[in-house]
Image 1 (cartoon, rainbow, N blue to C red):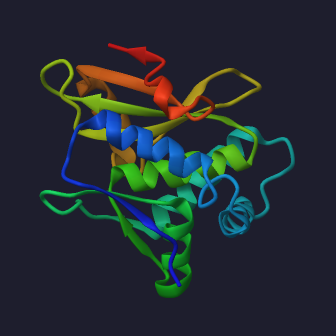
Image 2 (image 1 turned 60 degrees about the vertical axis):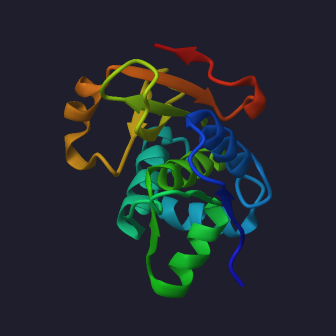
Length: 183
């Protein structure tokens, strides 16, 4: 049986979506899930201990190879728990999800590796109008934030250069706190 998918009635804005994402990452179908932990350990494969950058990149690559992008329905915002995505992958060999689902899975896998992860909701037009979300993860040895965005593909730099407005949401904070940084 597949874990729950949170369905938000209509699209009420990025704040509701990001709140649902943080809850999903922190909840029983996220960081606390043994199903997701098993997938995380599988993703790490033979990454050497203390190779933190390798852990981050392996988690991102694992999701990239297994979660195929698909838009949400036109008038419904859906947020799948990371556990739901992993169960779909186990059943079919792949899952389908949009940018929030993929970011949530990668962020959760990195939390399970002990990394500091954040969601970045980005807009490419007017300030405050957001259309994409991705995960970034802090590599503890260098302090660098690594952008993990399989939706942008190999051209992540071009996507980042097009960002006009953004908010950063911590996966360590309660979602009601809202974004920790906004531009």
